[in-house]
Image 1: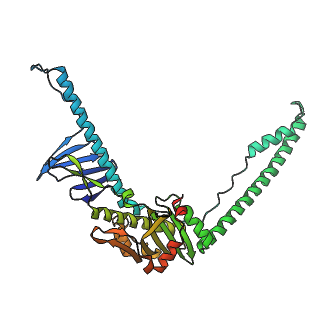
Image 2: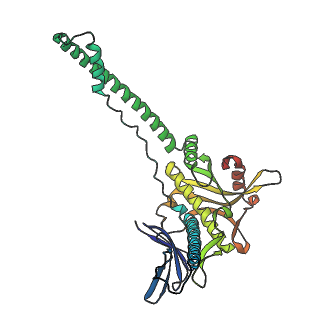
Image 3: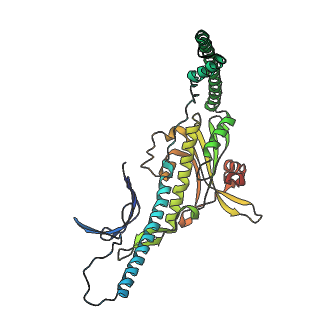
Amino acid sequence: MMGFSIKLAPGVRIRASSRGIRTSVGPRIARVHVGAGRTGVSTGLGPVGFYTSLGGGRRRGGGTSSGVSAAAGYQRQLAAQQRHAVQVERADRARGLADAFLRILNLHRADFTPAARPVAPAPQQPNRAAIYVHYEKHALAGLSIFQRAERTQAKQRAAGWTEAEVQRLWTAACEQRAQVQQYFDHRWHLLTTNDPDVVLETLNLAFEDNEAPTLALGVTGADTSIVILAPSVDQVVPEQMPTTTQAGNLSFKKLPQRDRADYYKVFVCGQMLVTVREAFAVAPALTTARVAVLRNDGDDAYGRPRAVAIMAATFQKAALAGVQWQTTDAGRIVNDVSADRIFNERGRSGELAPINLAAEPDLALLVAAVDIDELAGE
């Protein structure tokens, strides 16, 4: 398995390999490593480097001549165990944060196999031996073992009955398989000619297991309109990021608001891309997808869910061909391949603010057609 490395921030890097995910925090002169393998600290200057494991092995030493009491030794051991427990807790926390950031960065890289004409499975051959045993038992009923001529004739009759039954069962199985294939071909024809009902059913069935609730609202010709209900930034982007203290110890710092907003925009773009990739895969005759991302901002004064539009764009299937999914981030891809992009950033923070629907009548109609409770599955 090939590995890859992602730099989240100055001094913070995530590496993924066949051994798992490993996070390195801090400058080279004092760097903490957590994740796959043992937790440790490394230091390096020029061509020379050293690595120390924080695995918490027990110290070894000779006998004491200073009269150190057993109680003092126990206290030292207990303190060492407590320090190790703190290190493990911090390492687990850093690993969880690394996983959260990796999930955001890799969301759009999910791949989907294009739909193909379904083929009904071939019918199974009838069990000739079992059928013969059944008819032979029936034919030999009432005949003793000494009635050889009669038994021979009975077995011949059983063989004839068996052949007739095998042919009957095989013909019925082939006819049933032909009926199933005819149904498959009819559905495939409707799907590949963009029958609205079949395409909508296919899309929404595919969207059922999406992380963010997603709904295809309509199909016109080869175009479809899709709505995504995204979680809030607090539900997606961690507030902290792993770092190190001046002493080289693993620590956590609050992620600046601007950085959290940037990660959230990457998440929203990733949701849009993974949705259109799946849509074009399961409904291969579609050529255009208009996608609107809504965010549930809680209930209004009347207790009704208040969903605001935070991003919208149009994607052409042809524009996705050749995209370097594994090496390009979601935001760059959306900027390069989509059209009619609509979003509103709030001031210096860069947060995604609600879009003014009064200035976007088409988007307003799309949002108005959405039942938020139904979309959220409530």
